[in-house]
Length: 139
Image 1 (cartoon, rainbow, N blue to C red):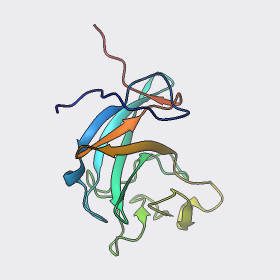
Image 2: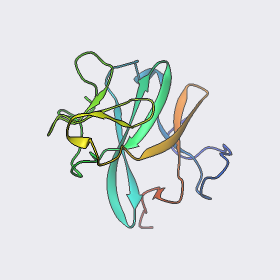
Image 3: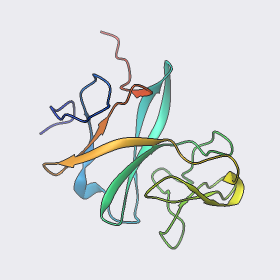
Image 4: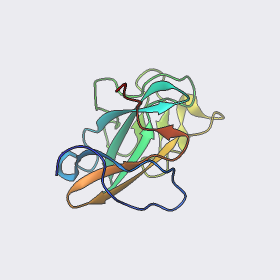
């Protein structure tokens, strides 16, 4: 199946169809993530999906401390022990499974904004949620 929408029902999500982000095999636990973009309030915002503990998790690519992208090189989100997501700018640490701040500069600022992803037929799909929506394409 190629990139694009697929018919998957996710309770509580927006009316937008799920978006094919990547192959499940592109994500290795604690390894490189896959970046993609979403629309938040009419702006293109970077997001990413990683694998941790055998499951895929996705977040907006914005540190809670300062709205800067986390990865120090494209797709590199984990710390050296592959136990936390790391903001390369100020060292904030986040739980890969929940997005909660676990230490560093994010303390008191909250966590990462999670995005709903599901895996089906060897693919990872992002489900738009009304806050983050698919990028608008000019026809």
